Image (cartoon, helix red, strand yellow):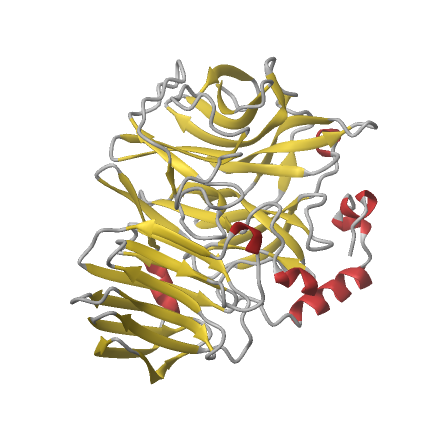
Length: 489
């Protein structure tokens, strides 16, 4: 179906109850609805927004076009949780209705200040000639969950020297001052991020660009985030327009981080190392982090990408969010692990120990559609070994380690209904290890694999048939020993 501009730019309030009911009915019949991931009730989900801890609960919002599986008039949808696992559907949080958000409430962040949660986001507008003007906007949620918008935008338009691509503010406090990083594009069409400072959340002053070594690194930097772990500064962003280099930068757009010294928030100076991709899979973008009451830094990403349509669109919905991940540092590398609270979902534990020699094996009690599984391989002399997940013999998603190339390989060529084939069906990441551990979370239409306790992560959507529930273990060119444990979800 071709969507007209008029159809894309309708608000939720423009739709009748019957229309919403029919959309929901269509979505509920989809064979690819997830069991334990955040997903839209109808329409399209994209960037996570406003991820925060407030009033004793975790709050998470996401970009939402409720009336179809396309990028249209963006709203904010609200879910909340006490444990990062079981999420309550709160419902519509921000509907674009003010002059400064006439064509959508774009991405932003949340911060607890006093007894309220402040939401800082981009308002998208277009004039009669379809020329964009961005506004940075503020709303406040009280302890009863009621959200009130400021009557005026707090930053009007883009600063001089930058294009209309100016969005996605990430808010934090340092001392008595508030700071925000905002994704931007220079007028020479190169990407950057701008740093702002405020005393009161209403009046914002431009400090300048975050000064990095990446003066020409893509044409737009979206969804910036700045955080600090163990006395280091970490700058996360999603650059657009990066060319693939070997196994790197294979997706249409990337998400990654720069690790360095703490940001100088007076000058914007940031001394850092190389850009590192956060996730080496097919479907990961626009991540956002928050600091929880225990001092953990927790990340959630969009399990999808702009301009890549997924098969569930035929059922009236698109995309979901990743599971929450705890971030830590190991030397100069970011480590990502699934939050410990996910263990609450575990049931029906199965264990297995075996050895393979140039063969593929299956085991009666190792099957399933939604589960968590940890497999530890000791590659004695096998040239390649790994797993085939969600397989029915013909369909399969392969998670493997090649001990000759010293690479982890994720292959969804035969995973089911194709998705994003124009960007390839195989992803690889270098890993030099004698023992390899795959920690996989398999849902109805996705897999997240944490390799060697979060050294690398691969996130991917898959669309297999409902009978594709097999789990196969294989070794090629020699022997491998392994231990596996699986819990149903």
